[in-house]
Length: 375
Image 1 (cartoon, helix red, strand yellow):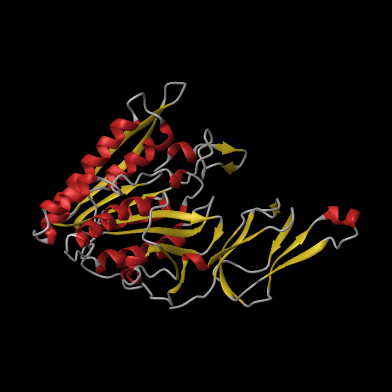
Image 2 (cartoon, helix red, strand yellow):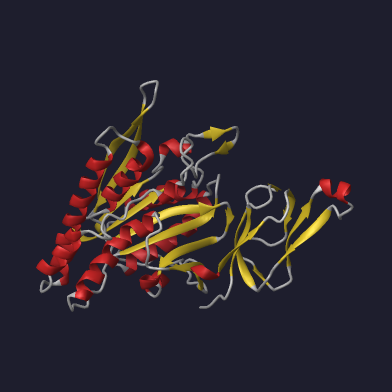
């Protein structure tokens, strides 16, 4: 049996010239009912590798049947991808407002009386029916928020994000594909999914609080956290069936189809363990999965504006006192200070990200690293 693949577009924005920017939605339905996985890439327009993974996944889905449904959104933010300054993609922030595109989602369920009322009405129902009916409520809440947001015209700051939330509403699993600047591969994992996240065999994971900070993963898992809290107040222990992760796939401004094959193996293995793919990929390898709490994810800020030579590669371990970067500042010649200086590690750790350019102003996020790492 083969999968049914449907393609459609959702209009997002009309440019001054009259052309439209649209989302490309690809919906893959298996021959049998099952879970729904939603995967999007490039909400930050310079973060391209997720699109290579979606391409490889589409190749796989053309000949390999699935159970359930997979919704794919390559290039989930076409405006951001098309905002170029010379050779650089200004894709992390809305160029008109300065807002981070991945901080514009909505937590419409936090203080919603509808969620409390839902919990009261469904307190004695089985989990399967609760999930089915709750997704309907979430869809209704998003559409209400969308109507409110566009009442005086389609304000673009947030409309994209509401549209993406709407598309992900009836899913069971959400994978939001990103990259770092110059980065390793790692996951953002909410605390309640720390154990379950081990089925996504990526080597590093940041364990974040079960709280809303404006990102897509939080926007999709927080409604379930809020429902669980309402059930708890009413005396019911409700286990959240929903999973959502931010998946970081290396460095921005590039794709690698070869690396995408390896990335895809991790995702296929995850889908297999969630009952969506019959056979596990044979080549997937489970690495040591290093974790740290978000509070132990440390940022080194550039002490001086300078040209920096990074001494530690993403994914590499370092010890306290190791040189992480060497800077060169010619202004120091006029201060009777050394032109060359070092940025040293304040504690043992694993380097995850560093700034994408050697030209760095003081105060910029030079290096990000995991400390107090555990398995």
